[in-house]
Image 1: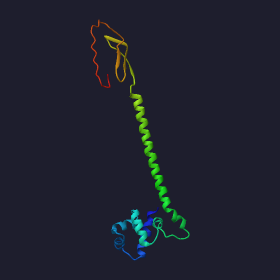
Image 2: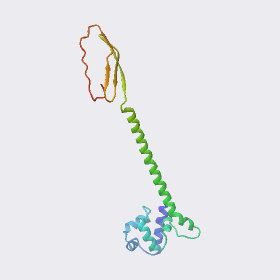
Image 3: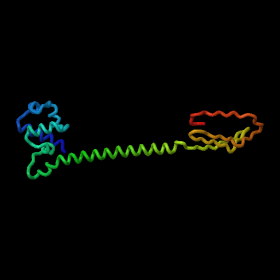
Image 4: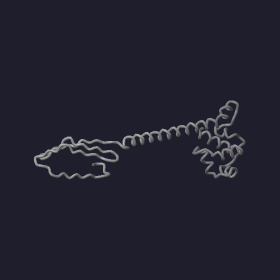
Length: 175
């Protein structure tokens, strides 16, 4: 569909009947501005307007959409124009459907991966440190979704350790 061709064709049809845009608008019940937009190739008539124009000019809607009158050399092309428009629209709709479906599949896969990785996963951390006074070897922290296990391992120091205070922050990422 060629908007330029349609606009020029509609202009020629109107001028053949010696009508102004305003006079044509009164005949088919549309404002002059709408006709001007068609003729300036800004947009094409709606389906309802195509039918009114077709009746008014005594031509087929396909002739308007092809931007030329039907003759022996273009008869087949003009008869197929509606089918070609439908095919183009169907291709666009099919492309959009495939695009949306692909997007939904990607989101589903990402959510599935997220839940597989994070749901009831077990994380294991090795705990150890050393400074001038204390040394901690082979400590381990195991965290699952429901509980955690902490083993401090071997603690050695220069002084006797009599008390260890352990603080746990629940529902925090860093334990």
